[in-house]
Length: 475
Image (tube, rainbow, N blue to C red; front, top):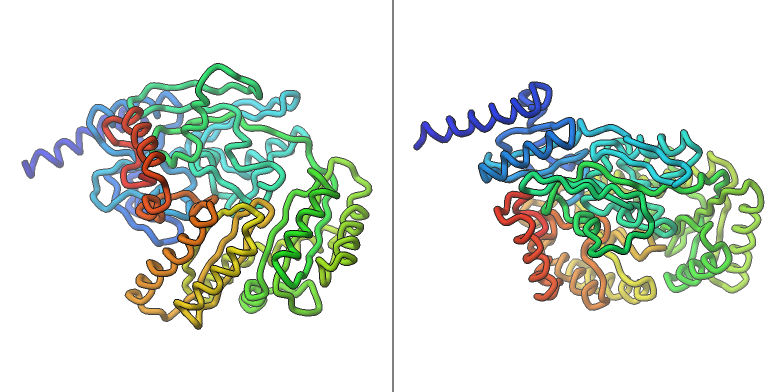
């Protein structure tokens, strides 16, 4: 038996090589290790091989082989996920299927406002292709230069423009998917109305590679904004921040594209650890907001935002504000907001909570969660920021860099339960935009009903009876 296992592996690799050719198999040890480890260096696995098909038909042939041999498959895009969903286990039995060579943009249709892109196309390249035809693809993430469309779809990625344009699910019209048995479902329909049965597309978006391999997608495009204006705002309470959000929506309508929130503790952390970041306001405030408007018309946007802020100040919602009228000023605001992740890494070890709640329940949740965390960890540094306009907070607890591993592990378990129980009580979600992966898999059973879990398991069993698609993730 000990001699037959290497022989079977050799046969499997030979058949893979026949399908994808020499460029389609990763043989270099360092390159393979890069695939076996997530970019956070938090999850480490050991795959049996890394295969890189360059066409949908090659993906289908690989999946037919894996279905036949019962080899588990972990689909991987840009490997930029936050929840370990694209990392194999350490058994050496799982195959990584990288979509990095599926990088063609098949069609751009500015009249229909659609773009058809393969799964391995970088998000930034989709944005650029849209701009070339005077259109706009609004999905915007910090990793857009390295994350792929397939990964965005697999995790239903969010980002800073969800308030106006929605998650990745809302930006997809059709998909092409290779099923676990190697069959190809061609659902690449560039239609906004298609009332012909179950929305199969939505089964795969957010499924984290557990139901099939997304190989291409038809995505929505929008008119390209030609004017942008942003403001940095200080408020003394989250209730006032919500009042400003409501007023901004009423006054600005769809021109409101971003409403990002940071606590004073978050801003202080950024100022300490991010070079060239500057305080936008003269004094400290309990809560800060970055508000951005965009429009397809050149004029009137700044006046609209200034008028909204004047009304908010008159109503007592806003204590101070500064408007960024040019690109440099807006970029300075976004440098602060986007610096929070790097600042946390430099300052300590973050216990992260990517949560979503109904917007109206945010003030009560924040007050209760602050108190509950302080009760457990009186000296905890709470770093609370996020996409307040769509109800997605990153409610993190920062531990010192020298916290021992055992203490850190205990704190993670304890604080996750404290925060997530409060999220559940508010009818929220414990994963808003990062996915479940390995990170939240075991916790999911505490917060999903037995009916939901049963339906998910039935779908999984029906579509992947051999259980070869991304085992150990999500479910």
